[in-house]
Each structure stands twice: as structure tokens, then as C-alpha cells.
Image 1 (spheres, rainbow, N blue to C red):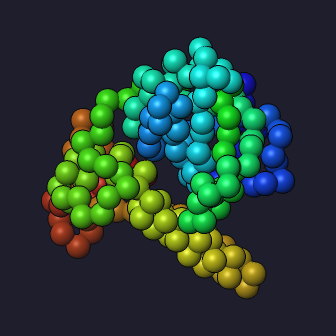
Image 2 (cartoon, rainbow, N blue to C red):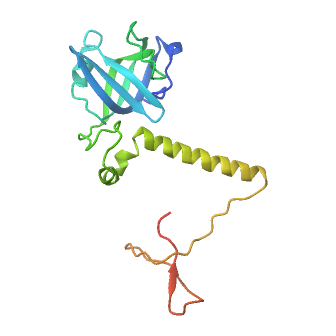
Image 3 (cartoon, helix red, strand yellow):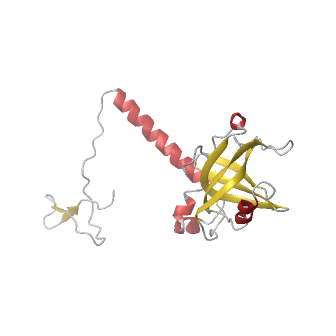
Length: 197
């Protein structure tokens, strides 16, 4: 089943609706058999509740969930109980009472917490695919996208065309055949077209 909403889109207006969400398990808490997870995608975070009184089999399966598992959740949007609202989250007034759980991809324990600052840069670069999930990195990518988009729109509105021409660069053999271009200024020397986009 496809998701119906992103994790950052749910509000009180959807209370009572059945929804399908997909994302990464960002955090997991067990409160006396009732399991809470924070489900994260690129749009935000939604709290999911696995209550054994409402869905016993699903709640049992939720005990196996760990950080960075990729899951699909089916459930009903419900207002959070009084005193448990989280004003720091856009979705902090609601939670989703899970009635279905599908693990799309389990995960090993990440080598560093994705929500912490101050993680060693060498470690972050070694696990770059995880580093890019961190909120600060995701925001940097969004800012770069918005800046490039603004420049493109500005130039397009003024009649400019964006043309990507081949770039000549030093030879970087990586196992693939290179297209070499002889240098006119330095006889016996060559440039190459880059192999990576």
C-alpha cells in the first residue's frame, strides 16, 4: 500500500482518518508494553503508538523495531492525550495509533546517533549515506536546492539558457575507457572528459 501522507503533514484536521505512512524509525520507547516510535521522513516526524489493547499482533511485532529500520505503518490519527502534546513538532498535537506494521528494511545499529551534533567528521564521512539523513545535512541540501532554483528562475525570466558543455579535466582512470583530447598548448599531453556526472 502506498503512503497517504508524509510524516510531517498530519495535523488535528486529520483526526479519525486512517493513514499510511512510511519512513525511518528515529526513536523507540517502551512504556509498560505500549511502544512509541518516532517515524521520520524528509518532511518531518510523527509519533506512532503500538498499543497491545488495540492491535496485539502489531504491538508484538513492534518490539523488534530498532533505530533506522524502514517501515510502513497503517493506523488512525488521534489527538494526543492532554499533557503529552509536543509543541516543538509540527505534528505534536497528534499521534497515529498503529493497526498495521510492515518492516520494509531492517537495519543494523548505526555507528553514531543521527540526531547528535559533534560526531567525529571522519566517522560521518565513512558513513556518508547515514550522515546525509541528519537534519542539519538535509537542511543544507534543501538550502542548496533552493539557491540553485532561485538562480535558475532569475536567469530564465531574463531569457538566459542553461547549457551544459563537456568539461575537460585531468585524466582520472577508474577502470572505464576515457575519451582523450590532445592539448594544443602542450604537445604530447592530453585532457579527458570526466567520467562521473
